[in-house]
Image 1 (cartoon, rainbow, N blue to C red):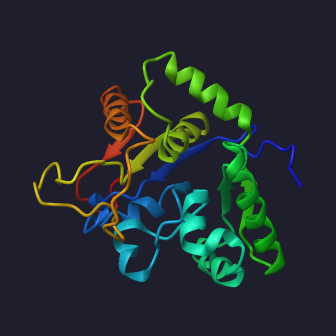
Image 2: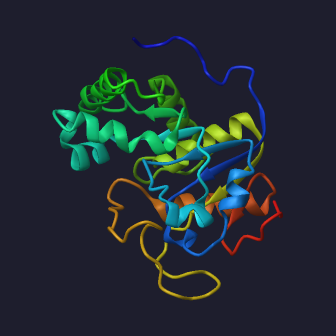
Length: 231
């Protein structure tokens, strides 16, 4: 069941949007710009409810699924299979990217995710990260000073976009509780205020890298209000 195909071989997209889940997206009106990208990547099964569509859009080509979310919200998929699969309908025929081999304890729940989508005929397509990609990515960035904690899912998705897209746009990548321009308090996520743990990830350090790459013209980091028709 583990495919050998590289889904991104010889593929290059003009514009890619990588969408994080920061509360900075609330009232941003970035949905139209996000959906205008040729390829859209979303992280960790975010809410795409109608009330968020104006700010985050709906188009999805890849969505990642952190096994910890599946464990806490869907009982490790030892039950609640239908409820879980129905929650994926919002992502359509996108790729569901799972870190099945990042740690041994993620393999079982990732396999159960595949079985659940097959059993209920979901159009979503589960795929696995190649563990060699994780290893290479870690070695590359550690040699360049990113040595604190584990690389986050968002960090990996930005790298995936940089490798396969001519123009990379980041939305919802702001790891702080105050808006940078409006100076107002922000929720942790645009869809809830559940506090995340930074025990495993160095979010401010990752953001510092994105800011430097933005200033160098490598990617474009969107932190303010989006104007429809502008990209």
